[in-house]
Amino acid sequence: MTSRVAVVVPARDEAERIDACLASIAVAASRVDVSVPIVVVADGCLDDTAARARRHPGVTVLETPGSNVGGARAAGCRLALRRGATWLASTDADSNVPADWLTTHLDLARAGADVVIGAVHPRFADLSADEVEWWHRTHDDGQALGNIHGANLGVAAPAYRRAGGYVALPEHEDTDLVRRLRLSGAVVVATARGMVETSGRHVGRTPGGYARYLRDDLPRIAAVNPVT
Image (cartoon, rainbow, N blue to C red):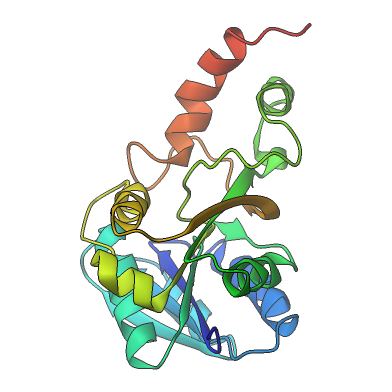
């Protein structure tokens, strides 16, 4: 039974973005009929991310020294599970979730999903006009591509425990977890509903994350998908 949804948000030096992120989660939380505690993991922060996050109602801030996104997500999930979370929803501190984000996760969980793989799109104001055109050319609106993003991922607590949870990887901890969830027999559902907006910055917190995709992969993919 999905009765307590926890949102886990790893953050490293995201003082400029954490307020908007948490405000968007609060709106999504107001649309569901269950308790939604929020755990922000301020991981190796050198700015006032933690102080800003503490100003938001319903937010617990966990400060860790690791500067390791996998370890940060794992720490946040451990705390959420100790407090009785039955569904773990994950996003990132540089992202804003839509109002239907948690209703999407809950609808799919109640229909039998153990794992929800959600879609993301970059903040188009952060991109050049060419990059916006490339993104739209290579992404079909409403199509669930099944790409794994820690900025929009949900998992039932029993399935998370069976798979062993997040591990302290410096990047791709989300794809590693989903790989083990699939191996454990979890029911994995991809959806384009509840699409999360994430930063369009080109230099990210990890070498191989979404920033690298926008900087290096998107132009290459667009080049082999010319306008018809």
